[in-house]
Length: 383
Image (tube, rainbow, N blue to C red):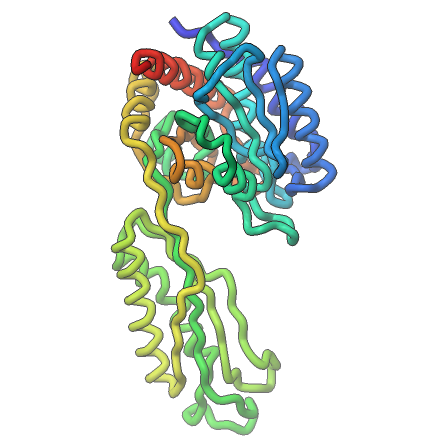
């Protein structure tokens, strides 16, 4: 029988961490490198030491903890404690505090799994600072260093950050991977002219053409893959004066999907529709790739083990993919990796209203402990 985590201690530490950069509306401002972020990392290191464990940091700022008598290869678990501005109190933070609770629970119980467990809070996962290198900084640096060779597996516990689990009545999610993310710049070029003296039928209005591309993005995504999500979050109209017909307009279109084929189909659909609209509006369309993050596929055997843990706990669960990026996506290219999700109330995340009921946070933490124990047993049998 596995030890039971302390729900009171888990929840108290989540409250304590939320005070660093805490806002009156219940959210947090703990952008990587801020005073609140650095203070939170100091606090985390002290909590690791209070549990009788070793705490240290690497050159980039990742915070680690392990049993003082432990030895590798290590099962690594954790997440990140930095936030977006005005973010929620659980995103990333939950996975770190749950990892701490699992480590100290196993150590207090004298369980052998504690000896091969290492926990981590990665530096700058969010990339919210203007000085950031785009996010996932700590995990990327970690995987480029020597210590990655000592990692037997990585498991990240996280809130879902979406509405799918709550809508389906799920309590746990076995995450099999992270979707690929492709971004495209769409540039429509028409002719700048006087907005008052140019007849409507004689215009080459780049903004009008861009608007028709924008409103079709959802249909382009649905045709490529019903499960795909898409977004247009950047729109620029030039020259940007109310009495000048726009001669150029730019959009940044983002597609997220579980398969490369769906992303390719969406990109082809975007190019075709932009060309059609441009012809109708007497404009020229140019669709260019802006960035591409390939999908991450997690370790099948590790996902199978997580499924067994969910069944043993009797919690409703499903296998799924994550539509948000995580440190686990970086680790998956270097070590066997998987993730566990708990639901997010109303699918809200990156906002002060981000919330998961206490009992689900507790159950997710216990699922992480059961996973650590099962993995330690599996690794012991293989040696």
